[in-house]
Length: 190
Image (cartoon, rainbow, N blue to C red; front, top):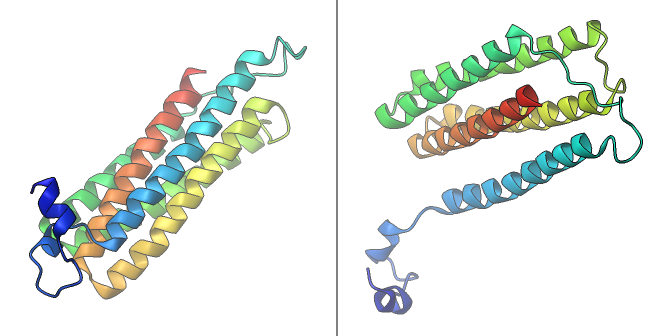
């Protein structure tokens, strides 16, 4: 479609063929949401890296201590990857059963994250023990809240068995997986 055609279209007229090529309002809203969430997580990652690198410069040479990497972190990552794959299967094959599997795996991921928090807390890596711990809890809590929000949207999509909404849920889960992989790489490498 040329730019002239796009500029002269009358989208308010019913049956306009241009309307079929446009993304839905929900898709546009989701992409805008991705932009906002991406900026938020980028700023938190930048703050994490700055605080980690500045600890000697501000006179706190030993207050940044990395947390250990328990196997549960890898297991949770694998569960989130499996959830994203299930959502992709639901999107491609239009299967509600695959979407239910993706939802169940997401709940399992959240339970695993809570177990990971409990593991760290009982091992003495509390929230206020050092700044690295605080960042870990902050980043994983924000990601977990986004998963909870996705579960609410998934529940609504599954209740209606709406294929278009299930496709948006798949897109959302891929986004959450990408964010999680960046966060996990950051937490494991520093």
